[in-house]
Length: 66
Image 1 (cartoon, rainbow, N blue to C red):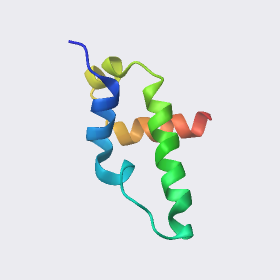
Image 2 (image 1 turned 45 degrees about the vertical axis):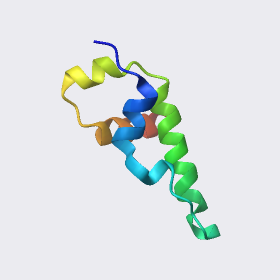
Image 3 (image 1 turned 90 degrees about the horizontal axis):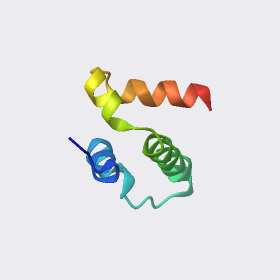
Image 4 (image 1 turned 60 degrees about the vertical axis):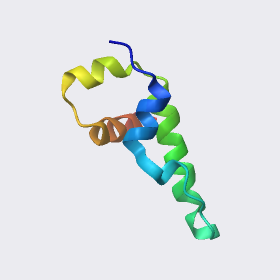
């Protein structure tokens, strides 16, 4: 089964990717979400989905490496 990685990621991350942040204080949050999305979009998701690992843990592992 092939997954559309952008559709899958936007579904997992929810509305956080599309929320309009009004204050400058929220800017780092938006940049962090974009960074997470870009990190996940570069790896094959099928392996992680079949492995049963929660996606938040995958994000934490990726952020530690970069």
